[in-house]
Amino acid sequence: MGFRTRFAPSPTGPLHLGHAYSAILAHDSARAAGGAFLLRIDDIDQSRARPIWEKQIHDDLAWLGLTWDGPPRRQSDHLADYRATLDGLAARGLTYPCRCTRRDIREAASAPQEGPAPVGPDGLVYPGTCRARPMTAAQGTDAIRLNMQAALAALPDLPAFTETGPDHPGQHPIDPARMTDAVGDVVLARPGMGASYHLSVVVDDAAQAISHVIRGADLFEATAIHVVLQRLLGLPSPIYHHHRLIRDAAGTRLAKRDDARAIATYRAEGATPQDIRRMVGL
Ligand code: GLU
Image 1: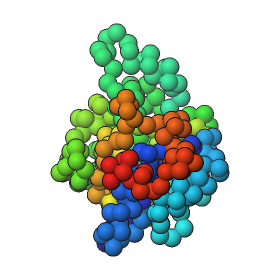
Image 2: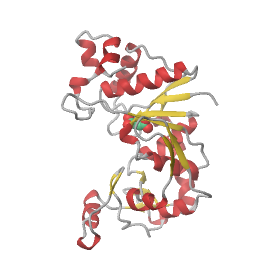
Image 3: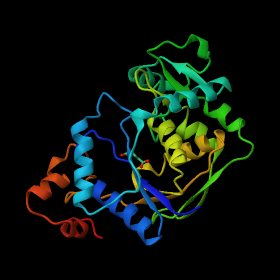
Image 4: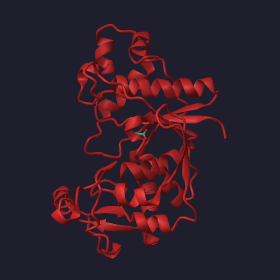
């Protein structure tokens, strides 16, 4: 399989310097390898996605001089695929409906006899309150969670993934105790939203035949979840490269609301694409 990577922004705000770094790195890696660079619009959260931001993603990437291969894949066009994948996991007894609010989770996790509550890639590790609820009890307002213990037990062997980024290069075997205790029963679908990020990213990377995932170091911890899902679903695992995060002068990671670092702002101020490359250290 050739080198195929992607850039998968969510159209929920302007692209900033951190996105530019991710997109340029992925684009340049694909071009250097004679491979493909694909664009994906991660608009699964329709309550926050806006056409104006999707248009600006196209404008900013084109202005940066990046070209992508084929039409972009838009998540909102594939809701039925995520649903079918979720139904398949449910039919195998690996999911359950959860009606806990964030507050319920906080309270259950901070019960005095429990000791300090573990925090995983999605925040507080879910204490398992709803784990015994059958899928037949699911209501439209429930989230659907993966039963991590059942999921690991369903795997023929424990997978590993390859990381080529600067922080943790090498092979990363999935540690089952860590998955159950420090990651827990992650959400696969949220009420009113077909699929969670974890489920959709795994389906999309496979559908786009991605060989190399290049993304920010903030997602390194989530990768083990993706690899477990890939193995459960019989999908290949890409090679992962988690790059350093672009921080502002105060050392804080850039966020979407940080309009001052928006590529559009630099453009309006007369910066060139070369200036942007320099600013992110490329
Ligand atoms: N839409 C996700 C984000 O912007 C994509 C993450 C990924 O590359 O897997 O964080």
